[in-house]
Length: 145
Length: 145
Length: 82
Length: 82
Image (cartoon, rainbow over all chains, first blue to last red; front, side, top):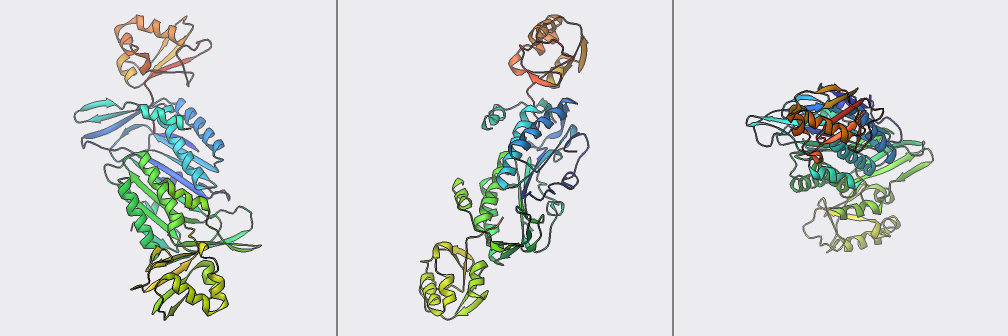
């Protein structure tokens, strides 16, 4: 239940049910990614994924983060399929003893999910459709860790 | 409704109802602080606050963060009174166009709330009670900004 | 007439959460000296100013700030919010 | 017999999401060369390897990795998760 790859929407309340109940948890951080419409003509976003490898890749990233920051809990949800502007794309949640650990682990998870989890985003606009290009800054972000 | 100082508990779902509905929001981050029992003998935490100044101080910090990171939404809740181990103490939530802004603003809010919002924590243990001392590292954290 | 508020261990040491004082103090420091002179418990609470913070009308400030026009002074230890 | 999977614009350019190929390729690069030689659409999809990534049995790897024992090869552009 710690990693979910699904087409359906999710709620924070649902994902965080029972989260961070360990007595040594002092801080939790959650991040949610949302379909943003920069130009006002986005019809929807299409997220393609590699079933099986997604889950394995995310679980590997979660295991790394959990060990490095001694997380007391960690959850990741990532959606695929057709998403409207404003829709939730994914979320991560981390729980740790102190706030710095919870924040760092959440940022680490996001940096690795961006570049190492097999999802591909296509933006379908009134003016045409385009695959979202990976940014070199996303790859560079990994050097921080 | 963006800043609440209250004795009652809260739920993320309640606080984040209608949060980040602006179309240019691409990322939201939330942080929750929880009463941690390090030694296993914590009876409760007592949070004293300065009514009026709390709200004003937090609103000032929120205004700073909102401007600096062009936040599309921002909420802060901070509790006072008697809190049991495992209870939620406070939360912040930030919404921005990109993830780096949402993360940085949330960390900024936390750093400033720690040292600039008039709350004082007392830990009541079986072995006695003590005011939580401010850490010099908390003050140093502000230099980052 | 100034309202003086105490929080956390300052409140505990002095024994009351607030009081109204009549004072001609020009600065926060002058007021601290007047309070120190009153009773042992005040002298103890204000023994080490480096461990104290002060707010005037709910704004954090320094001990050398003038008190003119101020209605509310609060003394407390460094804050531990969040 | 190796299952070969294509994602995102690689899939669109080649026109199919997956296929099973019979190949004696020793490395990923050898397999890429075999595919390129097949048809124009493959040649186009594999024109610039710097814009491609490859996974063997669902693990990210490099183009010079041997294929021995591998059951599934996937080609795709840099990932854009999160």
